[in-house]
Length: 441
Image 1 (tube, helix red, strand yellow):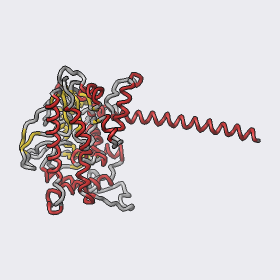
Image 2 (cartoon, rainbow, N blue to C red):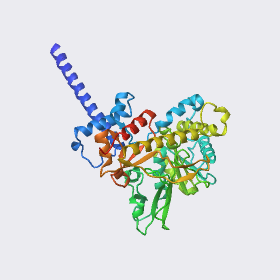
Image 3 (cartoon, one colour):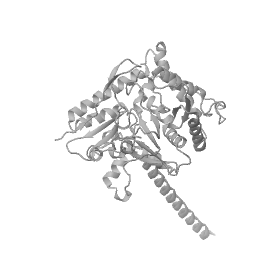
Image 4 (cartoon, one colour):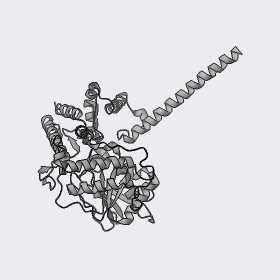
């Protein structure tokens, strides 16, 4: 009996060891896959070719987004992603003005508004969107359908589904002028849809066939204002206006009036974690098909996120329209404009001191919202390495531990990199200080 007990005990230990090993293997595999989704540095590479140095840099880049210690900050500066933590300090100053309390009984139903075309759109969120656009004057909302999505990424997929011909003999081409947003090709081809496919640089599109053109203005990555470039009769235009807000660029006296316009909470307020975007759509059938896509993929959009976003958007508007309530805090767009202006001056000073890099020059424009005349100050810097440096991403990563995204992912030259201007102050200060210290000598 004792012998049998010993044997069973050994089997139990072995079983536990095997299960622990399998769980660890699965964890590592999942972790690697999740990092690959957000990494553009591993594209078309075999993991066995990754050097120990590159593996260390990759690990430190991951730690940078999670650790707050000064030691981590001094080793790697990861500005590959546009994580808008710059806005965190402002919203802390707001105190409980943006606090939302949701009772446990609320939002039990799938439905928000039976009468609405987008039946999962919370009326409170819809009204806050209309109010903000009217305040800023950056987009027409009259005679438009509002479609809410889990970030502009889902809306982008929804609109591709909605505007693509369902009976075409081949997938319709989706194009955008280079340098284009690096995620456009990935998102377009991710589902391997038979309805549409990535067609590359819109400036090189010469086919006499239907196409979808993505017009991002201000553009990600270079910050320039954009218009459609293909200009053929068979084209369908989607305007991504995520950065068309007065902290980044001047607002025209004429509100944007396009058939399909995409916006997102993350770029307007900084609340990327809320995962919410909205589309202003003129055509009812397109809005219906977009809604259908979202229903099939996620059965609607989180009501909690919509309620929180509505509160934040209304406080943004209040900070401008009801100044007496915000004596100790600047109006949102005034604060954000001043902060971006300061950061771009700091950035240009660093580049001037280094003399190894160059930045885009932006035309000045008068903003109808603020009355200011200023040059664009984008959320990303489109940095070019000079002095014969062919791979700017590797140069910054390997020599100075600055993680940026290569221009090759944007359909452009690897002499360029895209770098976020929206991290927390201590990270941005460290980045500009390190950039200024990089000289040709």
